[in-house]
Amino acid sequence: MTFFLEALAFIADPANWAGPVGIGARLGQHLGITGLSVLLAAVVALPLGLLIGHTGRGRALVIGVTGAARALPTFGMLILFVLLGIQFGFGLSLGPVIAVLVILAIPPLLAGAYAGVEAVDRVTVDAARAQGMTEWQILTRVELPLALPLVVGGFRSATLQVVATATVAAYVAQGGLGRYLIEGLRNQDYVRAVIGALLVAALALILDGLFALVQRLVSPRGVSRGAMRTTGSTAPRPSRTRGATRTPVTEG
Amino acid sequence: MAWLWNNLDLVLGLTAEHALLSGIPILLGFAASLPLGWIASRFPVARGVLLTVFNVLYTVPALALFLVLPGLLGTRVLDELNVVVALTIYAMAMMLRGAIDGFGSVSPDVLQSATAQGYSAASRFWRVQLPLAGPVLLANLRVVSVSTVSLLSVAALIGSGGLGYLFTDGFQRYFVDEIVVGIVFTVLLALLFDGVLVLVGRVLMPWNRRVLAGTAAYRMPKRDWVGA
Image 1 (spheres, each protein chain N blue to C red):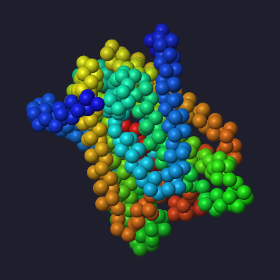
Image 2 (cartoon, rainbow over the protein chains, first blue to last red; image 1 turned 135 degrees about the vertical axis):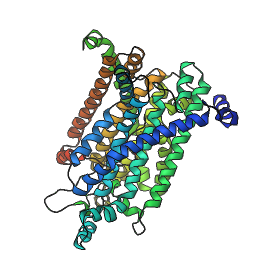
Image 3 (cartoon, each protein chain N blue to C red; image 1 turned 180 degrees about the horizontal axis):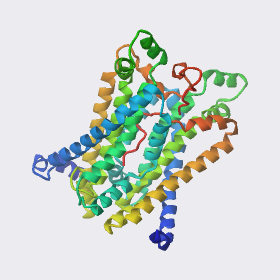
Image 4 (cartoon, chains in turn yellow, cyan; image 1 turned 45 degrees about the horizontal axis):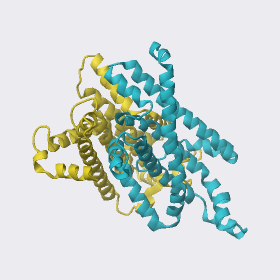
């Protein structure tokens, strides 16, 4: 327990927050790497996910990508990319690390966008179509607003995943809060490692809380929270059938 | 590939260690989440508390959890027990929601018919509710299994990550082949575990073959990618 007290004392001391290798700078690096990676991933994943959810085509792609991504050891991917980066002359730069983080962030974002649109009641979509909305209007004015909580949920998963992996990335690249952990492990300085562990855990929890808040805020009024939890249920729902030719997705 | 043949013993040994260190948390997490999931599916208050607690634990990145646990458990920093406990916590967190969904998916009508037919509370659980929740439980267990196998590699940083050793060793030697072998064997092990689970599911739930084929379809819990 004394480790924790020493670590907390270190974190509580404002002097340790300042400077180029202070907690503040490393927190900034961590957030910067995370934000950049998630944004880059979103540029790819969001349009694709929305398209797949809207058209219902390419579902197998989402399932395949998310399944395969789960099996890949992120730590191994990080090191592989960094070594390949060195071999191809990038040196020990952040490029390969960000590339891996982007790849990691794509599946949850893709799944969130796809699942969000997919979960919108088809009757609602048909009603919108019957009122003369174009497909673009249906997507942006009906499906997207209703899908937002799950889309934000995708951002939440992706961000947490990237924050965690960016910690491990300190093993191969400079920067981020993971430095405390890795330095502590290398020098068998447990207090330093715990400092890193506490900071990273706190960052993850705060971000998770913020995203939970955003998820609640973007839930459209009139859509009860219970009704939005469609993906949590395993019973087949009539709303998920899209005509007689297409079978509903069996969830779970 | 020459490296693989020359070091086959090492790689297979690490694979066995990897199977053990990820297999124990998968089984423990599954076993522990069943009673918790059952309680949570029955009592809304317990459901809220359990989901909140495990969500918080689950949000903590693995490397951080590996390093905080020694302070809480009184273990040594490099003790394998930390890794097993941490992965068990993650497995429970992932499995809990699946267990709640699974038990919740059994229609109350069916449960009431079972009671009406004279099943005691215990036998109703074992002979009606559990088998009917089986397919959902299995689908979630498969996700837990794959995630746990891939997550274990991070533990190489604290000296007990099974195949993750190939990553740290390969990095120190700047040796790409070793990393690729590590990744491929981790994925193969995850596939092997998955195959075993599917097989066990077929044996235990022969009535459900058609449903099982469908359960591989993606479902989205709040967060099913464990952070590294």
